[in-house]
Every structure is written in C-alpha cells, then in structure tokens.
Image (cartoon, rainbow, N blue to C red):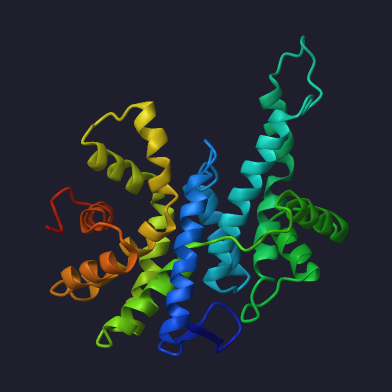
Length: 311
C-alpha cells in the first residue's frame, strides 16, 4: 500500500507506491470490497444527507486552516455522516425523544433539529479532531489548538465541552471509527493499477486524483443528479428510483474508479480506455458504469453537455 511521509507540518506529504506485495494488495482490496458491499447493504434512508456541499466545504476549510492531511477531512466527513444518521435514528425512535407534548406548536422533529443546531459546529469540529487522531502520519489537534481555533471562528468553547462532544460521538458510533473513506479507495486502487501496469504514471495520477476527488465531493449533488438521469434515462426520476439509487451515491468503489478515470483523461486522453478496462477488471464494475460516472463528472468539470467520452 502507499506509504505516507510528512515532509513538513500541514497537508503536504509524499506517497511511496510499489512498496506492498501483491498478496497484501489483494487482501486489502478484497477487504475494502467486502466492506463497501456491507455498507451498501445496510444503508439508512437518510444516508448521504450530511454530505451537502456547504458542510463538506466547511470540513475542508477546517482541515486546511489546521494544516491537516486531506485524509483527515474525508474521514471526518464519514464520521460525521455516520454519527448524525445514527443519532437521529436513535432520537426519533425513542419513546419521548424531545419531551414534546401533544399541544406543542412545534413538531418533535423541529425540536430535535433546533437542539442539534445549537451544537452542530462543535459536532463538526469534533469529527475533524477525532479524525486527526486516527493515523500516525497526521498532526493531532489537541484541545488547546481546538479552543483557539473555535474562538477564531467566533465560538467560545471550554475544554470540558470539547471532551464531552468527542465522547458523545465516540459512544454514538460504539467507538467504531474504522470507517471507509473515498481517498483510501483511490489510493489502494491506484496501487493495484500500478502493480498490474508498471508504466502507469502513479505520482502524476495521484496528484490529479486529489483535485478530482475534492471537486466531486464539492459537486456531489449535481454529479449524482446527472448520473441518476443517465442511469434511469428519465429526466424526472421517481422517488422509488431515487431510493434505489442510494446504493450508487454511497458506493466508494465506484467513486474511486471514477475519480481515477477522470484523472487519467486529464493526464493522457489517449490511454484512458485502457485504464477503464483495467479498473473494471480489478473491481468487477462494468466499463459502462465507469464511463457514465466519468462522463457526468467531466461535463460538470468542463461545464459542457457535449459527450466528453465515448465507449
């Protein structure tokens, strides 16, 4: 697998590809594939609701200001998503989740969201802080830095409140923080791709993949809306079609191959077909699916409705 080395404080790092054995790569890829399928088999109806552009942009901005590795941001997004989905589910299914009375002018849901809104900035930041502690190669955000950073954002938070917020998230996730994130999928897929085809320009593709993945994350709504219409061949997809499409929007493996394909097109448009073929062979995802994802992404990237790729 790709090894990370911090060259200086902050997000700048160098990856060393080609250091993992084929057996280790195979085991890792199989594990990621099983994990991805398991996640897709247990999606909640509200999965993906906490991946709006403004929220993702906020997390990216936090990691940039704190000079953290980009991996921290992607992990924080997944931690926040899982915590909020579980927290809301547990709250709404409780007997008296918010103490609402029948004559209350507000609905129970309104009261829950109003309560969440008060602490939401702290919750988001706590996800970033937790994510910073998961890898040895990343800088850790301690409570002194956290208090100072939140103060610069106009929020006065005590160290006790920080610890309570972290603990709430940890308990809410049953301390299970090994959540899959799209950057990890991109890195592993690139490693396997480079092992199978040594001439693959790994360093160049990886650099481009970072930009493409960030773009896809920030333009997530527009990209997947276009992909839904392409997949269903319907300008106004039904609620049932949108519900079934949830397994596409949350598919990290599809996102990974799509990001690499777009990067390959940008780097060398003459060889992207071979990259698609190799990625399809590696993951079992059809070339048609990879083409569709890459096409709608490139359309958003170039702001054109004309076909950029053709199978």
